[in-house]
Picture 1 (cartoon, rainbow, N blue to C red):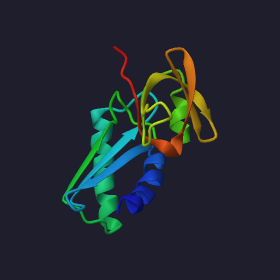
Picture 2 (cartoon, rainbow, N blue to C red; picture 1 turned 30 degrees about the vertical axis):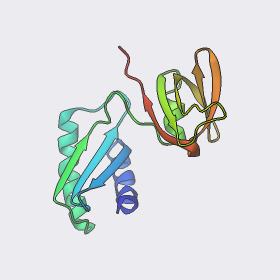
Picture 3 (cartoon, rainbow, N blue to C red; picture 1 turned 90 degrees about the vertical axis):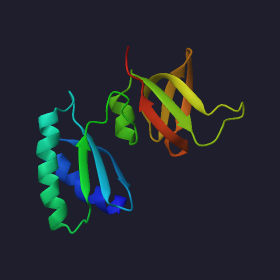
Length: 145
């Protein structure tokens, strides 16, 4: 359901001026949570308007659910696509890899320096570390204090 849902939501949100950040489906598909964003952030009123729009769209598309939640990804926004890593270059990130490296390390916290192809570079304690996107378990922005 999640891939079908993303296929419907991504172009719809783009048409409304937003970016689909993530979708979560739980309770056997009965609860749908959508995280969206745009440069400069989003407001509660925008979330409410998009929620109303998507409620109608999902009904037309035959997506059966009980509860829909539309919200901002928050200050610790997840990074998933190569474009996310390019957009947030210069920001602090927390990356957890699926597998440990030769030293046993799986977690990297530092400054995102950018992306080339599918390799993100994170500067950790002054040392650049190349991390493959497909090997990442999760990557998030670290909120500034």
